[in-house]
Structures are given as structure tokens and as C-alpha cells.
Length: 121
Image (tube, rainbow, N blue to C red):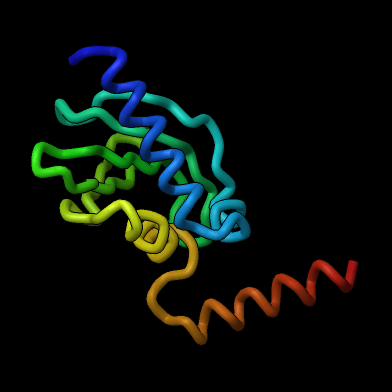
């Protein structure tokens, strides 16, 4: 696969993620090491996260149908979260998979507890 194309897709994914996802949400993921790569023969952006529900790598690929596929990789185990995401859904899908989950009340309670612990120090 052409290196320039891989770099272009990774940069586009990063820019779209930053443009469509609030910065406080991205920061809650503990993102490190943004890497342009090829995954399953598709151009991708790979980055390490340290979320509440998942710690490991998130891989966002662009498939041949112009949808994003989102994978979670922890050591040798890889799970496909979705294979049909539009650019403006990527951040929300990642957040539900690695940080906030699907129970909004439980996540809000967790955030309140973290805030309390931060202020109590």
C-alpha cells in the first residue's frame, strides 16, 4: 500500500476525530502514540488508550466502502467494534467502547466520584 496514502488517511482520521469529538472526551481516553499504519490491508490510525473500560490500542481503518472500521486491540486479542462508522460517529463509538459505556447514569456517578476524590486531595 502506498505510504503517502496511508499517511493521508491517518491524518484525515485524526483531524476528523479532533473536529467532531469534544477535547475533554478525547483527553479522558489517555491517548498516546498516534501511528499511521496498515491493518487488515486497510490504511489506519492506531493509538494507545488508557480508558476506564478498555486499555490497549484503538485502530480506526478506512475500508473499501468508505466507512470507518474501529478495532480494539489488547495484546494479541483484537475485537471489531464496528465496520460501518461515518466520520462523525467515530469519537462517540470509541468513547462508548473505552470510557463511558452505555449506562449514562453509571458513568455520571463515576465522574462525580472522580471529581470528589480529586478535590478531597
